[in-house]
Image 1 (cartoon, helix red, strand yellow):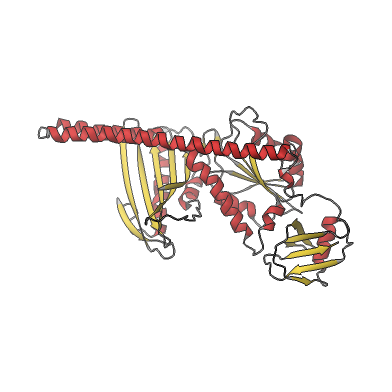
Image 2 (tube, helix red, strand yellow):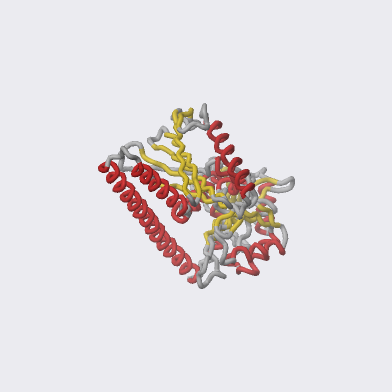
Length: 450
């Protein structure tokens, strides 16, 4: 089984009464989730439901719980098979202390058939996670507050400076995804809100205007900023020596739109960002140690009760004792194996990041992508390509992109708004020929020979 993503929601310190109320709210939310899945009796210890996954109508769920002197926990495991020979497993574990509540959730996939072949997975944030996030305003992970699955809007220099400080904060535990604007809008409509929903519980998503972009550039430097429709993912820096230089990945508007010849570029980009952030979370977000300790204490309590029975069989007791000991050892080994996987994944990430820094030191500014966004005047005989992001009453908003490769160019003598968009972008209308691709969709693509 492969863990695709993991989530951890922790409350602040609660009074005994608040803990009881919060526990009841969480329980009700989980029951409502199971009902929406189709469970007839959401409070049963186990059951089946009609899955909404196409081609795989039957799913099932199981509950289990345990308690000890340090607290208690409840767990729901929901399994949904798919027509592609996989089973998606959503596990929700709720840990109850006297003064706080912790939720640990995982999304996993399991192959139902033995086959040596790559299997594509497109993980989505479980709806129950979003439901739980909406229950409280004090959920946090480590020292960072978990935002609701809604993007923030920053539209001034002061906000940009505060965002830069948050990005450089060594205590930050959540990634920050910044969506910049091009002519007052992101590259795709509602991109920031879609990403906020996709990355609920795992990242803070912020949309910034030009003023905030300038402030971000002033504090972080152009190389680490985000502007002209780009999207940048800033990872937490932790206690790294160069924490003021944030580790990040950037996608320029030209890069994103160059891959959007069929109008589905936004869907592909969202899937890419989901896999990126969720993959890291699956390796770094671990379940609370208290859950394992509660399970171990509950098992030892059952063994002690068995030992106190007058009719207990000594051989049965010894087998139970050996089983508990072996189970605890296996769980400890599994935890260590998962930590080693995370360490190796971190080394691979560090190597990839170091390579990107080497490229930058050789003069490749990743914020400029393939130099499609630079305000260089076209030269005579040069050919450039442009992708439409949206239209305005007076002109189309265009971004310079790569050739789509379709070779289906048609004359565009009447494309007045596109021509005004190119003129606005390049600052000149001194072209010789203007063409439109007959195959590209999702706004279309233009070829201009200067």
